[in-house]
Length: 385
Image (tube, rainbow, N blue to C red; front, side):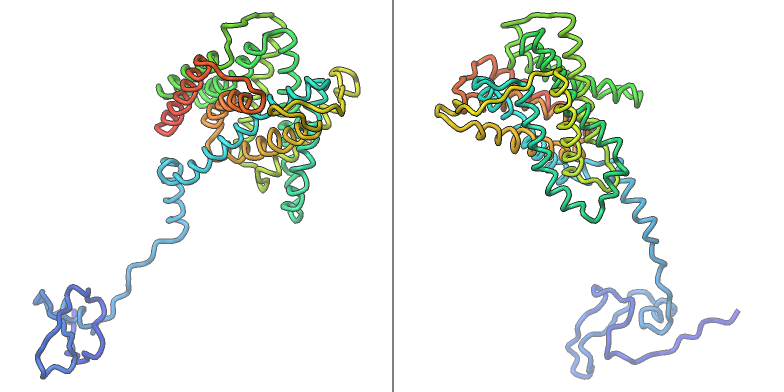
């Protein structure tokens, strides 16, 4: 085996390759033309040659992009809260905006009902108007990808029929047999249903914090809607209320799906179109009364035209609520998003205070605090899980 030949290289006009800057020192010797010289700390000639750049050594092979991508993906899957904190924060903000939007529906709808509108007409106007408000920007956004609507037709139809039209119809049928408080409590069992569904599907017991959060949220909801002040149970109404809860749970489960090439606004717009058609057909056949008037309405301690609450229902209670809700659910997941959605009841009480002058009581405020505590507990439980 021929020993390696080490040649002395006096080239000092450029820093030698492979030498870290910490190994370089400056000299004040006037006989040295280059102020930077290398001082090897190891006497091995081969090592010296490597530092002086006489022997070319190939660098270590780079890690393939595919392997790096897989490692990043694995870390993001195992620790989503650590790798995407900004996305989760945005999801919470979007979910709260959606909850505020949904919360305005009660005050705007009540103004119309007191002016002579039927619940079916108010809901149909809300959904049909939102289909137009969301449909135009959605078509513009998807103008080069209209095929995505066809590819996701099943999800869009299910979202419109079940999550939009079904939840509205079943809730109003429940109210005809139950008190409003009991009907709301049944409809907002959706988060608990989602926890049970995920439990059965994954066969993984929910985290203790999640179960605690569910208990706190349900207790707070009962206080906010004054459940114990006007309780009444009817078997038929109970079935309608549970059906509305299933539709509400379906809304979050479908919204959480990452549909291929279909952004949140497109899914919401498609659902509004399908839901509006279903509600219109139900009204045409006479299953739901459709009565609308043009009389002025009382809103925020003043008289306003009938179209003011209609616009509120269309833009805030439907377009903003459903559009932001889908975007939030995709970031947070169905479980956390559904519990954050319970804050809608708290916001509804506050908005009714501002627009209708209905002052909330101490019990309702305490219930709102329990709901917020429950949402925080669920978020902690899901993050740890």
